[in-house]
Image (cartoon, rainbow, N blue to C red; front, top):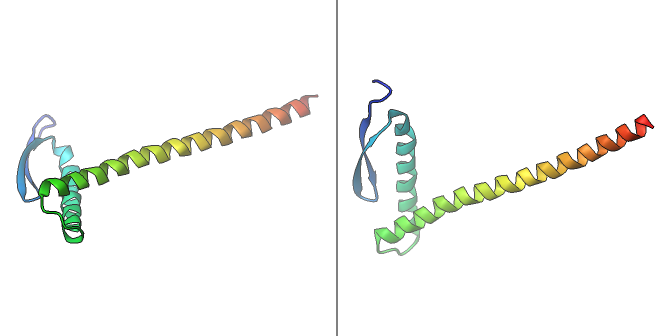
Length: 102
């Protein structure tokens, strides 16, 4: 299969089939995503009295989106903490160098 060739696949999500034309490199990620959505749909249907698939899919979308957003927040906080530690280390090194050079 050449690099510019597309792959036709079908994914089933919430009792609907979605035909897609994709880059072959996307197939594994899309299939895993569809499997995760299906799993979460079943979990919500079993644990909550939800009558409408739209509501279940909205709850799934919220769950996945919140994980992405929280991951960004966590990374941002980790980066900020790392920068603060680096700044403190830089000040210590600068202080020691100033002391040594005197």
